[in-house]
Image (cartoon, rainbow, N blue to C red; front, side, top):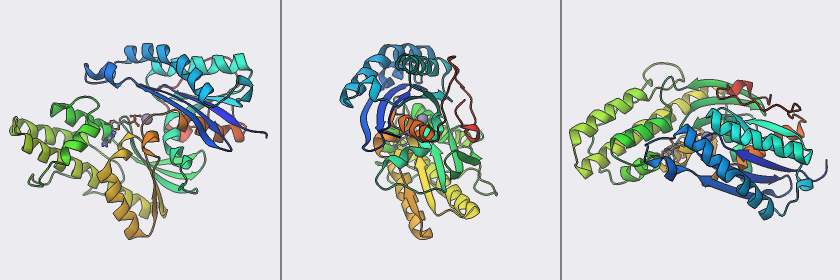
Length: 341
Ligand code: KG4
Ligand code: ZN
């Protein structure tokens, strides 16, 4: 195969991400437009507004990425787009544009699973893992432990039975009066905590198994917030205790899953993997176990086009592409079935 360049399109939620992955030089263009401001007044993502904004931004961003990558359509080998899971309207924008460009440029289109994108994002770093490994996927929509046996072989061995970790961060932050998305803001507030808040529960750690549950912890925190009123220091202490509980719970389950699978490589991906305390605690854990932990760089922790371009590249070299002309998206799509179309 000659020089491979993959155009990646991400539009599953509130970020329009476009990137070009070059097999020789890595990511050579990366454009990201975040809709955070658009949704902030509503305290969460409004699906219809998200779709409309993707429509506005997607073509100019593709244009810019192609210019930055110094690429003409004939230089591109395939177009990868997020096929699911996500918001149906938002997904349809990326899928329609991706497949239309593929048809116009006479290139293959590759539908990518959004979580596979997150999972493979650390492969773009200089320090990247070999297969197999354990992956902790922690985003606004998902919390799962995945036994990654090989490319495309993903076994989910634990997941949240209710709120995702990022969702619990966001909802607790909202109760505290912080803006959307509150995860990073809550983490910042937690830095001001003085450690005087009592210990919050570590849900589902007192029984065997690898599943998570964060909605009870969110309610527990809400009650502490109501009791604290407007006391700034107390709110910071609650943020600290909440973050400690989530981070500890994730670390306990990672330790269990590493023991169960026998892996000594851990990949942490998804928006919550940006959390500094989580990184610190997992570094201690992996040092103790004599293993290694791998992360995407900060830019590729949250939703982005680079991870989709890279996952698309992995499928392209295996000659998996989407031949039909129809546009189909999978708003709900199990990761264990992450084979395009
Ligand atoms: O992966 P992502 O960009 O989108 C989804 O696919 O969900 O993850 C976004 C989530 C949000 O819930 C956000 O609050 C959370 O990641 N997040 C954080 C931090 N940075 C982002 N949560 C805790 N601490 C952070 N530093
Ligand atoms: Zn995501």
